[in-house]
Each structure stands twice: as C-alpha cells, then as structure tokens.
Image (tube, rainbow, N blue to C red):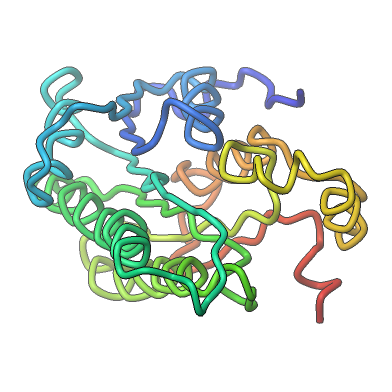
Length: 238
C-alpha cells in the first residue's frame, strides 16, 4: 500500500468527508490525517431529512475544530442492473444518494466556507463512468456525470468566494462497490486488461490526488476540473 510522505501538507486544516468509513472515503480520511488535517466523517443513524442530514457533518466539524477548510463528497451507491429491469426504487436510491447527497452536502459545506470568508476546497468523487457508457450502469453513470457537472457549475458560482470545486474521477477501484466484479476472475482479468498500468486501483490510489486538490499550496489555481485517476483506462478506451 503506497502512501505519501508525512509532510503535513494539510497541517492545521479541517476536513469533512461523507462516506468516510470505508473504501475510497476511508483511504482519503486516513491520508488527510497523516498530512496533519483534522477530519470528520459521517456515520449511520443520522436523520433522514435531506437538508438536515447533509448539514450535520459540516456543523460537527466546525463544532469540534472551529473551521471547515476542505469538504469531500464521497458517499455513493452502486448495484449492477439491466436497463430493462431497473425498478423505480433503484433509480431513486441512485439519484438520492449520488446526486442529491452530493448537492446538499456540498451546499452545506459551501455555506460554512462563505461565512468563514477564508475560501476552501470542495472535492466530489465522480467516476470515469461520467465520461463513458455502461450497459449495466444506466442508473449509475448519469449520476456520476451529474457530480462532475455539479463541480464545474459550483466552481463558477463559488469562485468569487475563493472556494475551489473539483471532481475526482476514479477508474475501477477495489472497494465494496466493485465486489461483484472482483469476485469474478474472468471479469477482473478483463478489467485489468483495459488498464495500461495493468492492475485494478486500490482506494489509496485516490488519496494522493485528493490531497493535491485539497491543498491550497499545491492546487490553488485548479478549479472546475475533473481529475482522472484511472491508471490510464479512459485513454485506452478511446
């Protein structure tokens, strides 16, 4: 498992991360901590009201550390399904979590950052899926395209507040969302064959790019971007 040197790149900063207990979110949280950052992550059991639910994490970070400098909208759901068999409940869940969840949580974080008047960095975990199609992902890929578009639009809206908004676009990463493919040797080999680096990504492979986008020293002029972290897969698919 590769990690960045402990350079304290984010020393003194406070971040909040949705879906930070597993997979990519957990890897980002651990790396932020190694880089000197205070990190709040969400958990199960919070209220179901969308506006309230997505403001609590930002509020908790501010209550604990007084400021919110970085926000990562990572929480997401995915379950493979044939287009003709997708039920309304599955589509609704995908839209509620992947799109509305990102929107409301980023909105809450942005409001806090505007009040502080110090700028900040908002990062949303999109996917290479935002740029391509997938027969078993017709309910999922549009949500990740929406997340990318959200960051581009927020970058325009919040630029005057010095709040940078960017999307990270992972490729195939070995998380719980990819269990179905990882347990199928034939499918796993196929996926690896599409990636020029020759391997499925680890959650830690996304942590470094997240630190880059979070750091005002490293990416202070990066705004409205979609940063691919896919081992070269998208280039190979063209």
